[in-house]
Image 1 (tube, rainbow, N blue to C red):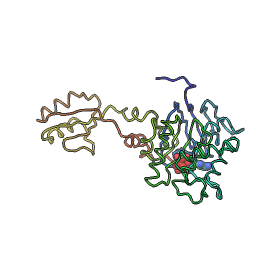
Image 2: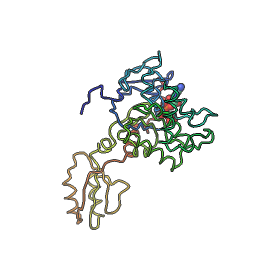
Image 3: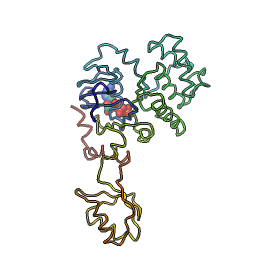
Image 4: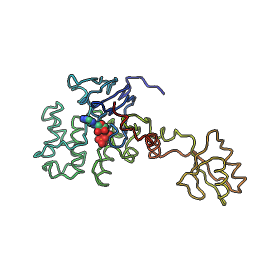
Length: 328
Ligand SMILES: Nc1ncnc2c1ncn2[C@@H]1O[C@H](COP(=O)(O)OP(=O)(O)OP(=O)(O)O)[C@@H](O)[C@H]1O
């Protein structure tokens, strides 16, 4: 379904970003509506570069784009776009904590940097720290914070000015399972219950599955897929999950003779299969009857996000030159 251009949260057309000869982002075209969006890619895919570019901290080399209705600067950043910064909360990957401050002072300072009057920034700092379960720690010096608390403090500074959109760079980086769980729950609630849009950059598929409605797969600086998680995972029409009753040995052989691949995570009576082009589902029934088994269930088998991701990046596995291809 097409969407009016102005309804997009992010609308990029062929955005390229080079560092000298190196192409960190290549002709990235994205049209994303408001919501919770996962930006998924391995280290070096270009995720941080894209976030900085959207934040207006880094110019694109070429292309054009808008975020929250604001036009991105191309070639060079001529002036800081304060309107854009007020609409975005940025949680950087690196620690940007100021030593010697208490948690509440740090978040207040962030609010003031976004242009809020001091009293208002202070009030909001207390609110967001309470919301992010740091109420008891707010008067403590931030050097005493655990990694999980520091990550939530970084989220607090991104939320202090109540922006409609969050750009989150690896928000669960370095967290133990319990802290990661807390962070993902808070992000989900912020999106689902408080209407925040977010672009969550991560290399962890499970983070995207837990929090996001949509996903953008970035690899080697290129977009390899974008859409809702369900849509992308269901796009393959060639996989089925079938359950049979009886001795399935002959049935399996019969399938293989018809060029059907039995996928590794099948069990003896529950098969996950990949069918060849022009396959008709009636063939399952015919082969089952011929092999003396009863077909109990047959349904389309959507890919998991992990399978989708691996398939999206598989083309490059044989390309030993992919890094070289990003130069020049
Ligand atoms: N200032 C820079 N100068 C030169 N190359 C850079 C610069 N910043 C990033 N790069 C390169 O651009 C590519 C993309 O980097 P980026 O940090 O955007 O990726 P990423 O997906 O966020 O990965 P990571 O999670 O490792 O940060 C990497 O190969 C990186 O080495």
